Every structure is written in C-alpha cells, then in structure tokens.
Length: 246
Image 1 (cartoon, one colour):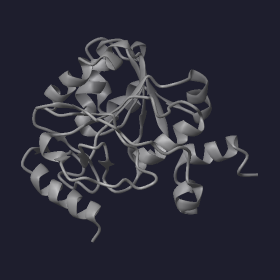
Image 2 (tube, helix red, strand yellow):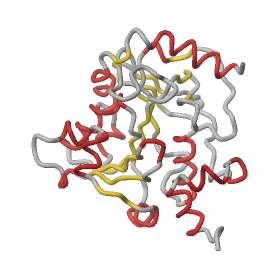
Image 3 (cartoon, rainbow, N blue to C red):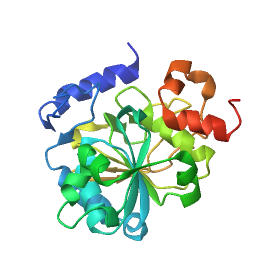
C-alpha cells in the first residue's frame, strides 16, 4: 500500500465523524468528497481573501463541500464553470443571470446546476479566457500544498486541460476547502501530475502555502487509457482541437 493510500484511508476514518452523508453515495469517500460540519466557516475564510473579492469568473469542482461557496458566488454575481460527476457530461456554465432570485442554493447543488446552467464546450471555455481562481475539495491536503482527491485524478486532469488552453498557470490561485481533520502535517512528495494548492481553507484556519512547488502543465496523454478518453467528452474535444485525432 502506498503512503498516499495509507494517509487517504487514515483521513477517511477521521472524516467519518464530521462528514455529512451524500444522498447517493452516503459516506463512500472513494466515490464522493463530502460536505462536512461547519463548511460554511471554511467558505467564510475564502470569501475574505483578495483574490476572491476581485475575481469574477472561476472554476469550481462539483464537491459537496463547495455547495455553500457556489451559492454565495451566485449571490455575489460571480460566474463559474463546474465539472459534472466524473466529467462524464463535460463542463457546465453557471452564471447569476441564469438563476432566479431565491434559487441560488438549489442551483449550487449538482441537480440544480444542470437545471439552471448549461453545457459549455472546451472551445467556448477557451474563448471566455482565463479563470480568476480555482477552488476544489479534497480527501486530504498537506501543509506543503499536496492535495489528494478520491483517487481518480479528475482535478489533475481538469487542470491539465486548462493549462493546454492557457486558462490557468502557476500564478492562478488554487484553494482547497477541507475540514481540519483532512489537513496532513506529513511532508509529502507530489507526483508529476499533482496540482499543488496555494491555500487551504478549513473551519478553523486559512493556511497559505509557503514555498509551493511548481505545478504540472498539459495533459499526459500517455498515462490515459483509451477508454478513459472515450468516456470524457472534454478530452475528446481537446484532442480534436490539438489535431491529435483525425
């Protein structure tokens, strides 16, 4: 068992006490990054930051712990791109003008996202330009900025696609929202595809990562199985945009 897997499973045992069950996956943390007690306080810490206040357009992962953030972004007039579960249905655009007043909370949930928002292609994402910031959930994140997801690598893949289009780079603020029990003090060595975060927002603290390492660029196509590419519409579109598929 790898060190990453050991840490992830240790964190999952702690998370069980504070996690809010998902309606579909309950507490199967290998399939869902859950909401947790006092996640709104972690959101408070993000919205107090200058990058959030100045930003108007962001990429937000579909994790349950980011529902409050997505709601508050809509109420604040900010737009976002959100990935669907497993990226199987690509990316969706959600903007304040799409959501009737009073429906922001429903729109922040994944079912509401697909009710009020609309699909957005990689070509249109590229046309809209750079993201001001990114926010993701995590299974665990270390104080040196190494983030673990559920183990499927979706956020790393999304980052790779966005770097290919010049929408994010090493200077784009990336924040992980997690519970305090998900913060790891161990020194971790990131994999070549790991996206390091700049900040960690928890109910108890806001951590700024000192001396963060360099983030990866591009998609490592050689690491992807053909079946994975076939099941992920944005990857197929990106390959066509890059002239990789006839």
